[in-house]
Amino acid sequence: MKFSLAYEMQRPTLDDHAVIEETIEQCILADEVGFDAVWFVEHHFLTTFSSSPCPEVIFGALSRLTKNIRLGFGVVVLPYHHPVRVAERVAMVDQLSHGRVEFGTGRSAPYEQLGMGIDPRDSREMWEESLTMVPKIWESDFFEWEGKFWNVPSRQVLPKPYQKPHPPIWVAALQPATYQIAAQKGIGVMALGVNAPSVLEPEIKAYRETIKNANPVGGMVNNQWLSSCFGLCGEDNRATQELCAQSLKTFFGPGRPYVQDQKDVYSKLLEQWGGVPDHLAQNFSRYIEVEKPDEAQSSNGGSGSNLDLSGGSALAQKIWEQFDAATMAERGIIVAGDPESCIAAAKLHEATGVDQLQFLMATETVDHAAVMKSIEMFGKHVIPEFKKADKAAG
Image (tube, rainbow, N blue to C red):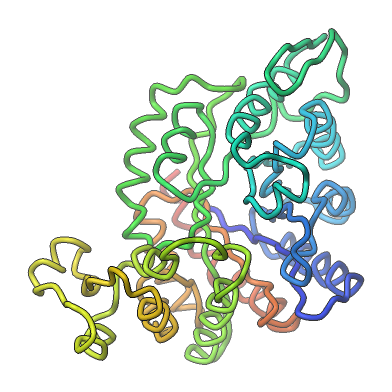
């Protein structure tokens, strides 16, 4: 299994220079200690939440400051850009890095789409048309296209990617329908919803079956599944888990970009985390209907109780807020704590068939020193455990 880092480039107070310098320092260390990839988001208008509007620019620096680590667009928001410009920029980074690019794609959310002049109702079709175009641009000597959103007369587009036929293609996915679209198109899944591994296991199996009959959009099938979670390694097991859990809860707190305007978001997050833990179900049983133990056992693998939260979004949020760090770590929602705890949680993901485990580590609640220490400890204690297993299996 591979290990990677995700970057929103967060900062609670606006200090662009500091976050850029610290991010580069962290990526250089990740390269040195054996992480497989770094992934950078593309976000716009999210002041303090994300300072990463143009991954290709920071990749220009990292392509020459790192040696082995892969550089992942996580993701290029295809509706925002002319497909020719996407093909050119991704290929240029691939050339600069001697073939270390991962090409993630996505559509973003209505708040950003509207700010960029994109009708959210068009975003899926725009993503699909651009996704079809970009590999053809890379594989063609002269390229031309007549489509719904873009028209290109016959033109030669350079440079071509360093990797042949082109970098691996991925899509950011939050729901089963997108997992299946990825499999049908022969592209990798970036499961960015922060789920307990047990919740994703049947989805991974379904993806593997569907991709066997893929009609790939490019010249290769990228049969890979990436799962994203929050990760942090430290010497003090409990304190590190608490810090990581707080980072996760701050990230998905009320009004934050990934949850705003979503209906029943905290009920859905509880489902993604494997259901309400039994001790919290007992605490709140006077307010909500608790399923019988045998019903809960059959519906969620016995990881917790299923509660009737219909019409109770405020209550779901309250339970979500009280979800404890130890249970998160035990279920693999976070990969956090001392090295032994991190190894145990990562193995939960590995057992479900995950190819790459991506950690969001550097957030507004985890400072630079803690991130650097965590990267170092993952490289020294955690990653080698899985590399040895991969080597033995190979």
